[in-house]
Image 1 (tube, helix red, strand yellow):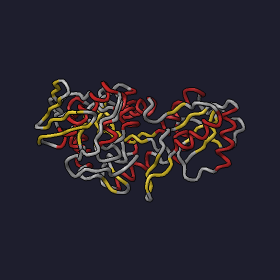
Image 2: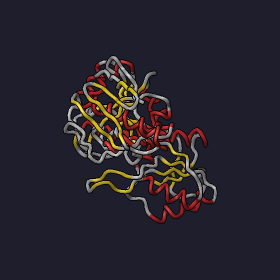
Image 3: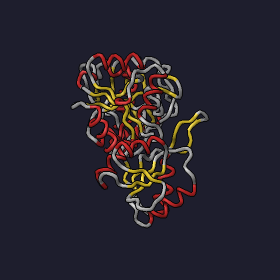
Length: 339
């Protein structure tokens, strides 16, 4: 269930790791209030990291986009799944190893910076690395699939099944990984969230002994925090909404919930549970005959905490997801973005 904090949760942490899409920006615009909140964390002396599964862009390109939407950032603040993949490959194969590249510029640069040699000719390659790249050709995918089937070690930057585009959600790198691994009958080593390498790479590069992960997606950001046993804050400015939250199994549940990043600067009370009745801040939630019922009035954040707790209790005890078909969350926040 949710964690309690009697003080603003940021005070307990010296590294705040932010997901990007749906947390810091949506498309080409920063989410309202983010720039000031990030700066507030910096001026308190805490480390700030921007963590992305997208391996197509270099850290410098990501930082440039952040600055372009008004969020203070440098290249050193950004950690990508490409960098995590490159470290895995460098540790496994040593300096100057030839790595067959199937991806974009972000992955190529990360391999070079790790002392590896990205190649497009498989002759002499000791492993293959793949990452999202809009210009990856089908013939190259076929060749890599065959090589992986025949035993070439395979490291994938991430397995995200979707990626945001100007025309909506589109197939992400995970679809490519699924194609290669399905054909080859091989499970790749995955560097990105929710696996450990990217989370560990972030702490290693940016510093901090008491990190917290801030994300909008349960199956990458929140599960990734669980993977390295650090707390997480779920914000509701991205892809996760009520139907996702109430169905979350323990490994997908955040430590804290808040509609926006302002949740970093507030205490987080936990609901009081009496049998199946859950209460907090004027809200009361129960699940009766499988249907969620909410009554009362209070703050939006407390509503989400109350509802999540009631639905998770029901899910754990019954094995079924509560019916929320007639439940309308309070406040203006709605599904805005995707990672």
